[in-house]
Length: 114
Image 1 (cartoon, rainbow, N blue to C red):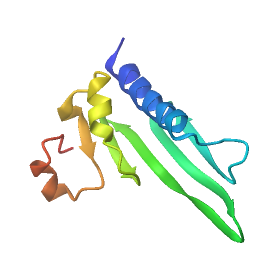
Image 2: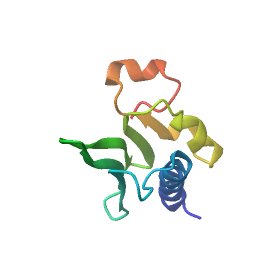
Image 3: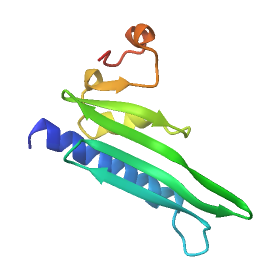
């Protein structure tokens, strides 16, 4: 399997597993999770959307982009260790970029810098 397809599948599998494990989208849940998969542009998200009482909730839980052969984690609004799960699914540590870390600080993360 080519690297791009492997990395797309690793990200999609991670998001789907997260939704299944957290029990999201139960019929009684007011806040729904939406998985957005754009293989053509290599962009993948998990969003929350819905009403909690009179307050509308909308926002990203995860956002990933595949850029120049690397998985960029742009957003992680959880305590989940995404990188461990991606590496367990065959993603090379240097092919993971923590996009939410400033470029000068990325060299200290142990992951890809760009």
